[in-house]
Image (tube, rainbow, N blue to C red; front, side, top):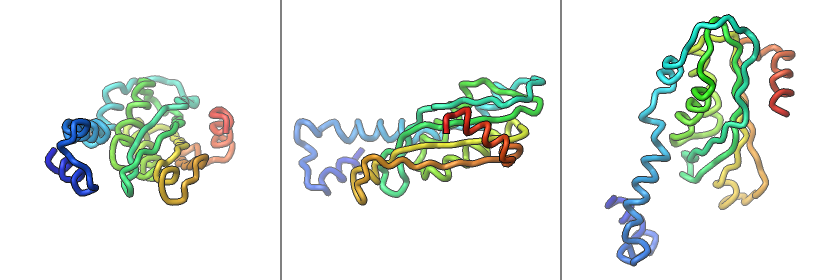
Length: 178
């Protein structure tokens, strides 16, 4: 907390001012929460709800809210993830897909890496016939500073296995409304 107090002083604030006295403690707790993904294991989450199932059609969890911190500016970015996989003998609890997104989003991050970390965790743990991840996010580092583009949305995607085939990829994109 002393470091956060020092940061307040470095920007010219009076850290003893009534409104700021508890700010270092609040900020420390907020940072612990916003970066809790470092303490979590996405593959363990998936393995904890991995079930044998003969289903082999596309499973999609779309519009998963995500909140992360840009590692370059430590400003938030937020948006939605759309995740699909084609089972190959195993399925997982649907909420686990959303939790995997949170595990990686709750780290200092870039959207490109986040996309592939989600894909890789699902691919390596469930060993499906394919995985697709599309993330759409707004970055406060682009909105509040720098180019100040208020309506910009960044889209990243990652595909493996059967999703590398144009027909399967097109079906996924149509089903998520893209």
